[in-house]
Length: 149
Figure 1 (spheres, rainbow, N blue to C red):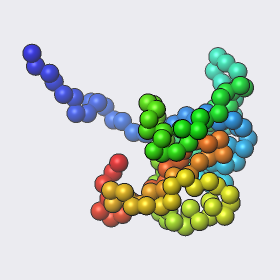
Figure 2: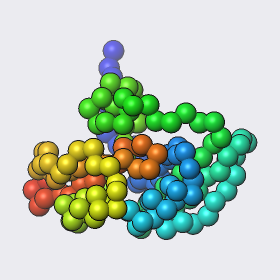
Figure 3: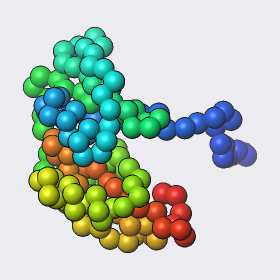
């Protein structure tokens, strides 16, 4: 029996968007706008359900923020990069930045909780913060020799 391995999908593939559940839609729109520079495109009703979804953009990347009444907050174990690895599923979104240490300093000054201070890992400077709903956000600054994650 022969097993074939597909090394590419056979069609162009690029990141498009990520969806994140949040507790307070307006506060989260402000957080992603003020901390990471996202622009609000529009707010819509959640399809076939209760709640709202905000569509934001940074460059060509889209972010969907979902706020649904009664949604459970992020559990404590999902709020730290190491303990979050013990739960299957999507771990975090990472954003590439030009000056990670400068951004972390500005975020700290604005009260953002830094979970993991900037550290070099695999030739990449990286840090983790929590958004206003407790979701992990990774920030990376690539060095000239760093490989793509």
